[in-house]
Amino acid sequence: MVVALPLYRALITICTPLIKYYLNRRMINGKEDRLRLNERLGLSNLTRPSGRMIWLHAASIGESISMLPVIEHLQARDKITVLITTGTTTSASTMIDRLPIGAIHQYVPIDRLLWVRRFLDHWRPDLALLAESEFWPNLLIETATYGIPLILLNGRISDRSFARWQRHSQIIRYILNGFVLCLGQTLIDVERLIALGAKRALCYGNLKFAATPLPVDLVNLTELTSQLGSRPRWLAASTHPGEEMLIGRVHKALQIQYPELLTIIVPRHPNRGNKIVAELISQNFVVAQRCAGQLVTLQTQILLADTLGEMGLFIRLAPIVFIGKSLLGRGGQNPLEPALLGASILFGPHMDNFSEIAERMCNDSFAEQVVDETALTVAVSRRLSNPKLLIQHKEKSKNFAVAKSGILDAVLAEIDPWIEGNMLT
Image (cartoon, rainbow, N blue to C red; front, side, top):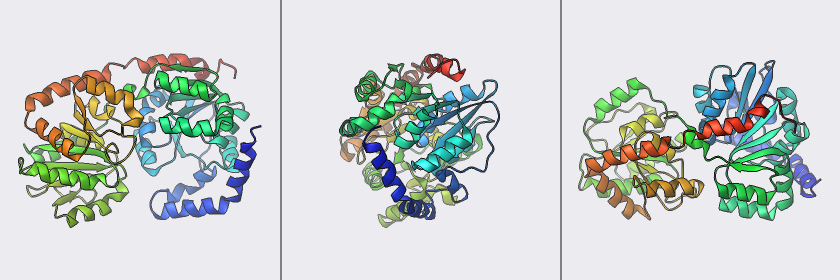
């Protein structure tokens, strides 16, 4: 056994009171589900259905949405139940709304050995699929110890993660040794997985390309389209702290040329809504807050869309989309969601989590990387003044997003023997 593992397990056990305190603080702040907090301790009020169960874990909302085509395919199979675990309330709400009938959502247990074993003993999955890169030692090592085949889907090892895991090479090698198969998003991810200890790693591409367009409530779309009329508008999607005020400054600069401009902001974490509104109002912006049911008027400068599950609505309303966490934050958010809906896409220099996709989008000339808020202002203005350019970008972005639609079939064909239970670990 890896020397560091017993130390890690002892530390987690010793820190149990602190972990429970931390969970309670998160619950008070709305980041944990009060009614389902026991799921984080490996407990469940649900009974395990009979038959084969495939467990898929996706850390948060982005990963869970990208796994929906996989979940839908698996749940449609006869005598298979899909259990999907996530770690955030926003991802839980999204999954509950969008999961196919029969699929089960649970919160993933905190990585304490007792809680992980409770979870595994209760659900007894026949196969475990992990999305992207959340390598919790107890959860994954114990899953392999239980004899449950582990497969990594859409594996991603960022520069920072690779450097960090190289400093903990023994434990990541032990973790990856428990996987029967690792499927990386890119060839670089595959190379890194093998360097860190994966026994078998392949690349079919990024499963985010298999996603379907984000859903929309047609009644809400009709109502807001009527409210907005012909006003010029753009969207800042999945923004993080600090970006809202930056977007506000861009709006002020653009409003000189476009006095009727409406800027739509969709924060990554809607529970920050009231704080964002207060910040914007302090800078004399006229704000309509979506979660408060405030209507957009001719005087409204910024629509703060602090709701869950409505990103598809606002992308459809705005032909220009800026990707959050790419100017002030690091990593960026998923640019394929607006591409599927034909948006002209802008992002900052920090698209580390989607670097290959971002580069290819720029090469296809419907996306642009901007270095700062001044460049963002210029880029938005250029698009607002050129409707023909937006039409060109719409066609190019949609073509780009659907070009890799065969990835899902290739991935499912590769993992099918384990789905059917015909492979031994």
